[in-house]
Image (cartoon, rainbow, N blue to C red; front, top):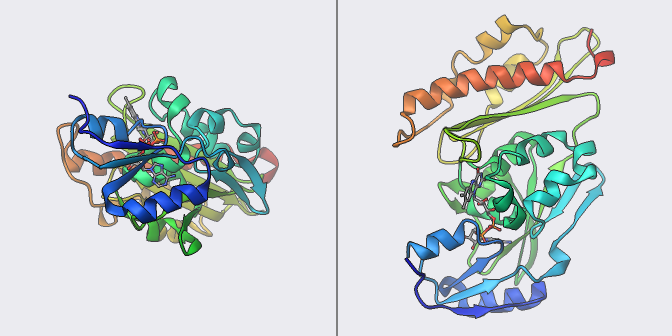
Length: 293
Ligand SMILES: Cc1cc2nc3c(=O)[nH]c(=O)nc-3n(C[C@H](O)[C@H](O)[C@H](O)COP(=O)(O)OP(=O)(O)OC[C@H]3O[C@@H](n4cnc5c(N)ncnc54)[C@H](O)[C@@H]3O)c2cc1C
């Protein structure tokens, strides 16, 4: 199918993009890499009168270390993050997870801001950002606001972005060099969206017990889910398989998956439990040796 007719607008500054959004609001849609939006338009699931192509706004393409964050401009493409030495050094979880976003062709066009704004609960970036407790910088006519993931992702493909706002930057907390991290997902074929995915970051103290645990699961509910109770349970405990087994016992209480043609809800819960254990064990193994008791 072909998209319904639209008027194509090409701002080159953030101000111009916001002016267009102010003028056309609900009738307009932003397009960045088009990797999610184009199929939606082609199937006529969305028929905006105006497409605002922000891909020429050069000031939105950057990866910078700012204090305890890696600040990534919304228009930075997936492959740029995947290949960034800065990202590999300060947030290896992100480097690992990016390799699972579609295929190289998708990653060469798709953008960080697009993936976050699209808010697919099975997408890798929202899950990693949630595990890391990252933030989204939003810009609109009244200036900027910064929101945590649990205030940004509302439900399937829905965020707290207003029609006159755009994602400006995504802020990924730097991972302590003494911590270990892991991203693991299960897909039907490589490059597919995850059935379920888990991102984990762990730190151990001198006794070898958990001093830091951050965990999120994607594909098991309408938004990425931070496994806060499991994190709290693990702190101060030994990183053994038995303890981890115990920690994930009640995982289904936190999840809200729906069954679809790819897998049943029960299978997603099972996967979440298995992958959380695997992600934790992998992250523990990646804690630098000097930091393990
Ligand atoms: C075959 C295929 C496989 C895929 N596999 C995966 C996968 O495994 N994992 C995964 O995560 N994704 C996957 N995707 C989806 C895709 O990679 C991302 O969702 C996509 O990269 C989003 O970025 P984009 O720049 O292409 O966004 P676009 O398609 O341009 O936009 C997506 C949505 O975000 C909005 N938007 C875009 N930029 C902004 C902004 N700066 N501010 C506010 N709103 C904005 C748009 O209005 C639209 O609603 C796949 C896509 C295809 C076609």
